[in-house]
Image 1 (spheres, rainbow, N blue to C red):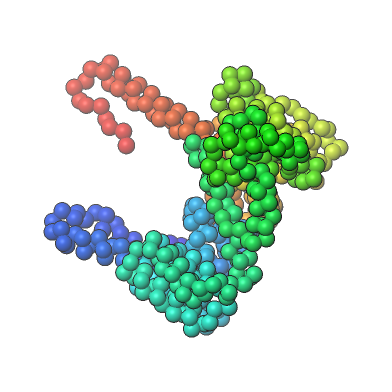
Image 2 (cartoon, rainbow, N blue to C red):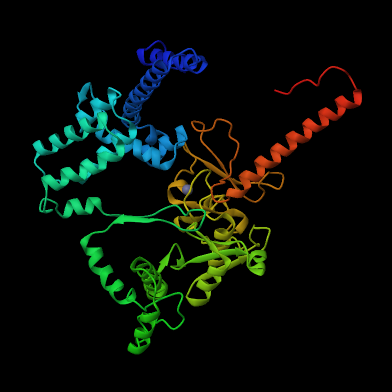
Length: 498
Ligand SMILES: [Zn+2]
């Protein structure tokens, strides 16, 4: 545990570790059902108390400015990297600490923003799920709400959560909101701006993604007229070739009415098709301008083999996938960028000589196809959020050749520097497991080994391939060992491997 010495907190963590080891080693078999259930409840309670301790740690991390010292953009990113948390979990912990942590500032102890919830968490009465739901419910209360009512709502939600289920806390929150602000008069523009948001969920295996969000009256005002026109029965139906598609073509009344009669789509399906038609035909790349040096539009990449076989998937620069058929359809009908690459995956030589600092459009497309996103290990930023960078800096004589270029998102690129806590990048040689890829060397606080790592996040297949080949080679060693033993025909069994 380093130089923590015999301070109370170090002693406590060591005791905790010893207790956890003892718990894992102990058998529940001698217990009666009632005794076992009691042990399970008590363990759950202790785990919840530990959550409260971790909430305090998050705040302490921030107070010590550990992320600043490690040159990482935010406390959440520091937690994500140093504790290997998911992005969502790291952000959630920081949000919880914002509201529940007891602050220690210059010898002063400050009360948390939601003291009742904090106390229930410290007592082990509520779980992390309860806390999340309570924070969501509190967040929805109007900013102008009377302080007494706000405190009453906090107490009410916490009291319920101490005996009830997380899923019901949301309903209770809505109920409270209906009582304190029945006609929504207390909810102001600031509240609405705080609540606004639109999230495109992770793409599922079946290719679909959830779109979740809350929109402001302003977005609704500009969105509804689009739906009114493009989501009318008969408009923009993908199943009906006679259906009018764009706002540009003058809609023939009879043609629309005939298409409407054939239209069997639900209202939700019509809304979906309207949005697709709008973004596809109306969101003109010429108006949207450029983003990181390329016109705004869907950039599609696919392998030549997949294109020829009409199989497999195409990848977009935003990290999504779609079938080759859908990609061809999209590319044929609108101003999209289609890049086809050979089976090897690494781009062709597209050198531009050493007198140009900026990468060409072709080089950028090649990198999008090969690297698919930011190359720093575990970064999930897709190509649309990444810029082309020199692996050996331009200022240090690095050439603008494809071999010296790589994709990195802005926050990862900012991590590369010669000062303390800085990362380094190298192109991996032919003898490496991943030749031609960009290797990132983490600062010592994250990885003391100094071995360059590549990012597998945008290449999910290769990690699996590496594991499979490791298992195969282990099996091969095992087979070899068994063969030798049989050859010797001894009566002793083969020595077991670790
Ligand atoms: Zn990144």
